[in-house]
Every structure is written in C-alpha cells, then in structure tokens.
Amino acid sequence: MTVPPHHLRWNLYGAGLENLGREGKPELLPTPQPAPNEVLARIDAVGICFSDLKILRLGEAHPKIARDLRQYPVVMGHEISCTIAQVGDALKDRFQVGERYIVQADVYVNGRVQAVGYALDGGYSQYTVFGEPVLNGDAGCYLLRCPEHLSYAEAALVEPWACVVASYRIQPRPTPQPNGRWLVVIPHAPMVRYRCSALEPLRSTDSPVLADMPSSGTGVPARVDTPSSGTGVPARAENAAHIIAAETVLERDAQATNGVAIVIVDSRGSPLADEFLHTAQQLGMATERVEVSEENLYDPALLRRLRETHAPDGFTDILLFGTPTPALLETALDALGYGGALSFTCHHKLDAVPVDVGRLHYDRLLVMGTTGWDITDAYRHTRDSALRKGDRLLLFGAGGAMGQMQLFYALTRPEPPAQVVVVDRHPERLEPLRELGTPLAQQAGIDLQFYCNADAEPEAQQAHLRMLCPHGFDQIMLLASSPDAVSLTYPLLTDGGVLNLFAGIPKGQKVPLDLTRLASRHMRLLGSSGSTMDDIAECLRLVAEGALPARKVIGAIAGLNALPDALRAVQEHRYPGKIVIFPQLPELPMLGLHELATHLPEVHAHLEDGCYWTQAAEIALGLLDR
Image 1 (cartoon, rainbow, N blue to C red):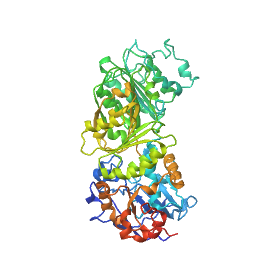
Image 2 (cartoon, rainbow, N blue to C red):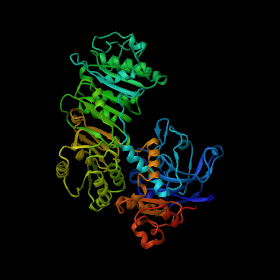
Image 3 (tube, helix red, strand yellow):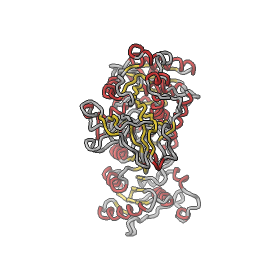
Image 4 (cartoon, helix red, strand yellow):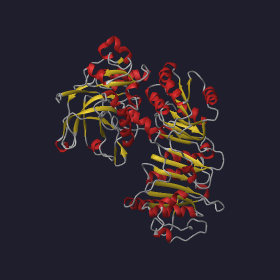
C-alpha cells in the first residue's frame, strides 16, 4: 500500500465551526510515521454522530476532552472503519498491511476512559496513528478485525449500533462494588432494624474478622468502635483536627488496600455500621468510621468534605439509610463517580430533588430507592435494561438514524415488547420510522404507535401518551438531549419502570424530580453511554451476518472537505439517516442517497432497491481497490 507524504486532517481548536480546520478547510500535514509499537491506519469511512456537535458546541469544556484545544487540538470522529497502512517493527507479528478494522471508541486505561475522537485522535483525517492506549488498553486491543464483505460505510456504523445494543444490556450490580469507594450514612434508630443483606455474599463464612465479632442477637454484629486514626477512638465530625488526622491515616492505608469505605453513623451507634466496616475490612478496603450527632447526620457539607478527601473521583456506591433530606440526596448524586450507584431508604414523600441528568448519561449513574428496612431491596427491585416480552416501550425523540436503530432493535427481539410508542416533533422524520417499523411490528404482533409532539405543551404530551399507554411504560428510552424531556417522561413510567437517558445532555443540567417514586414504586433512573468490547464484538457479528441492517440507516455520503457542511446538515436534520464521510475522496460533495440518481447515476445503479448503500456502490465510487 502506497502512503502519501502528506494527508488532510480536520483539527478542532475550540468551540464552534469557525475553529474547525484553518479558514474552513482541512489542513495538509505530513503523514505521521508509526513508532515501533504503533500502526498507521488509513481512514476509509467515518459516521457523523450527534455527539460531534456537542464537542463543537462545548469545545474544551466537553467532559471527555478538558484540555487546551488551542495548544492540543482534537480530531473528532469516533465511528471509524480503517485499513492498516504501515506497521511498527514491534507489531509485525500482530498486524499486517491491508487488514481492515473497526474501532471501539471507548478506550479504557487503568479504569479511565480515553475515548477516540475526544481524548485520542479520531477519524476526520485521511490517516491516523494508533498506539499504546488503543492497542493495549484495559480490554486489550480496541481494534476489531472487519470482514471483507462489509462496505466501509456499514463497518463504520457498527459502533453506533453497539451503543444501541449496549443500552439494552445494562446489568445493575446486585451489591455495593467490592473494593470500590463506599459512603454509607446510618442513623441510630434502635427500634428499626435497618439491614443490608447484600453484604452477605461479599463475605466469606470463614472470615476470622467476622467470626470473632460479638453478636447483638439481631443477626448483625454488635457495635464495635473501629479506631482509624491511631488514637483508639472513632473519628468525630465535630472535631475538625481529629478528622484531619484520621483522613491522613486513611489515605495511607488506602494505598495498600483495595478501595475505601466511609461510614457516617449517629454517635449513639448502630450494629449495621459495624457490619459495613468489618465487611469492608474483610475485602481489604480501608475504612473510616465518622460519628456525628443526630442533627448533623444528613449534613451535605460533611459528605462533600469526605468526597474531596477520600474519593476525588467520586464514590462507586452511596447508601443512605433513614430519612435523607433532598439536599443530601442532591449532594450524594453529585458525589458519585463514573458508574456509581445511589441507593436510599425513604419512608415519607420527599420534596423534588435537583438531579444532574447530564451526569446520568455521561457517567452511567444508577439511582434507586426502597421503602423497606433492608436497603438491598433497592438493588433487588432494580431490573436490568433488557427488553422483556410484553414490555411497553417509549422511544422519545426518535427521529433520525439512532431512532431507526432503536426501533429496529426493539421490533426484532425474539421475545418482543407488546407495545412501542415512537415520538418526535418533526413529522417528516417520523415517516422513515413508520416505513421501517410498520411491517416489522405487524409481523411480530406489536402495537406500534407514532406521535408527533410538535408545538404541544408538556401537559398535553403527557395526556396523549397516557392515552396511548394508560398503565405506564416499562421502559422509556430518551433520545432527546433535552432536560425538559426528562421531567416530561419520568412520570410516565409504570411501577418498576426504567428511564434510560440514551441521549447526551450537558453535565450540570439539573432537573427537579420526585425521587419518592424510586422507593415507593421501584422506578429507576439510569444512563447509557457508549459500549463495551463485548457489545461491539457482538454487533460486528450481527452486522456481518445481516441481522442488523447497518447500511439501511445511511442517508447521505460526503468527502472529507465537506465535513463542515455535513455537520450543519446533522444539526438541521436534513437527512433522515446517518451521514458517512469518506476521507479518501476529499472532493466528493455531500449527497443524499436519493440525489445520487442525478449526480452519480453510476453509483446509484448499485444501491439496493434504489435506496440502500452497498459495497458495490463503494466500488463504483472508486473506493475499494479489490
């Protein structure tokens, strides 16, 4: 394969289209040369994701970037199909020139995401180098071999399909994360037996720590003061100097252990606090017992201080017993780390709690509650996100390619839902969904309804959706990146229902929500963002077998030079499907597939049924050199 000395590349130097490239054009730069442990990839096709528009809008304020783009620009584009062009000397036994790959964009290194197209260079470039993070991340190599019979375009769209499939494969953990970062708040409550039976599977029965614990006669260990500061007494929040000393020891201990458990407990004590602390110690976690007065038990300032000191990346699990206040619940949500879970007990109606709905999506948070004394009921009554036979599903804001993927996936399940309601405010964007979904729904016996909510007030929308589904929805997949859509759809859940924030809402956008429903009706809030290696590998298999029609959601094609106009087209919803960029054809104008008959009839002749992209169309376009 001949590699040119120079190539075209779209660097983004800040927020806004005016900061994309130089004077509205891609830059002509020397083609990078791979180091011994790197490969040079030719970018064959890149799908435009709505997430690219969020990067354009936020620039370096985007949560997955957070760097000075003037000095360190980003190359966007994470839906990538590529071919190996050069191989570093140390990798010649792993890669061969000419091999085709797709890219899993969610690259993890030491548990932290370094996403392609965000922290790492993406695909809006003719060539790029893949090095250590992509080739040797936590999950191994994030490049997946691509079958030769797939077109470049449909191979690139395996990545967004994987995001769709992943949104229905979320398996909430049944216990606090072993060796995670726990924060637990426990009241005295001597007349109430608060419990966490989820701790039992985390402990081994032959543990010498638990075996030596005195019994309280209640089935949980009796109270044992757990010194952590070396003074022989528990830390008390009322003594600031004592807290500082205890925190210093805890940080040192945490370096030699796995995880940390902070237990804030009423100073009058609780057997459950001891159970949490000893379970954590058995797991090898550092522990800290913080005793406070009853009136300070639910102090948000204390929780914030403990997070800053002991869990700067946020807690994996926060468990709040008793009657946590809305202010504490808001602070607890803000204190969760990536993939974190908040569970709480609730025994009376709460005032609305401001919820950062952007973090629910980007940080894949889970919020759950229970009215029972055993907080494990919050975990136990949390269903996974898989569609079940007979479910009632709402796809809200479903116009566009991702909505088409969501609809196809829902209607083709082996055990299909009973009802699917599709909502969008653009009537013209509902038509492709109707054409796609109606025959599939009839074949599967699914009640498929469409609703255009243009210009309708939120109350009117809720009334119409309640008329379509009087008993509420088991699952709501939110594809509209609007905080108002969260408050509109949340009350439409049925008991045990799940609201899944699939669309990205900017972090910091808070919506007041009645979290009492999470406890009294076991409704759940969670977010879905990206996919795992297992997800994308499964989708690649399904696309290769024809089970997922990746090429049937392509609405337009364009060359690399047309990227700014293509991004505007996505923003303006000009095409009903995905726009795919072909970097190796920089001068190709942006064309909807329906426009090919006029502008490129020789390519149009190879579309399936005159409207679906094919590998033969790419050959006619001059892309494939086989």
